[in-house]
Image 1 (cartoon, rainbow, N blue to C red):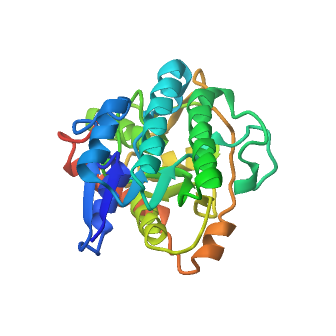
Image 2: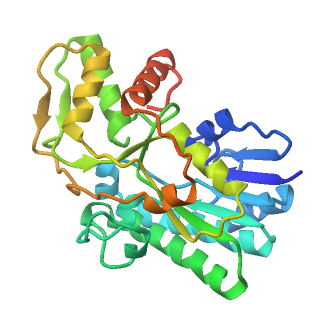
Length: 309
């Protein structure tokens, strides 16, 4: 029986993991910031000393949507540096057999050849809109690679595209694009207001449903395959405008969607390749976007009072 720590365990992906785990013979510890402050090296060490994990799935991060990334760069950089340093350091010192750390596709260079693959990670600076978060995550990848090269630790990074699903953060100021749009449309319908999308709606993104990501993480956790970095993504892209249209349709919003072009769009596209993922696991099945959105919207409506917002 193994002890498995999931940092960020009460967040969207942690909750998704909890919902799809079939093997309950192992001990899973879903850790939140209420349990341990992972920016504190003392509390992080206490967590490792108490649980003595065999495996660590590192999901915890200080995150937010485009506008938090633009306006809170110091917090984005420093808090994530501290969290990541502490987790990697003590994963090594406590002999963790496998560490899976979660990055983000925003860490890739702004100017890059598409589709992006795992080898292009450090080939140029990231987009200015989220560079503080991106560099903190790049340092996590570099830190892990040093332990892997010097001590042969079984440490790896996953790089998911934009994640959405139940238990997301639906805050209108700080949320990522899909939960923010869901909340905005919900309020527009409820209060007979305009559904307003920040920006032009033209940027293209790849979205992965949280439970699909959770299932792939479990495959990696129990797999003997040796992988350093792995992009986790669907193949197709969709514009923010088309996402807004799908969300509006699900809410039966009848008026014209409006776009506030005073807001920045951020990076216009960051198309990634999932060829290494599909070569590694040839049985991956992704949830269709319409189904994932329907599930997420239904959950948000049913949990409106308790959802993070």
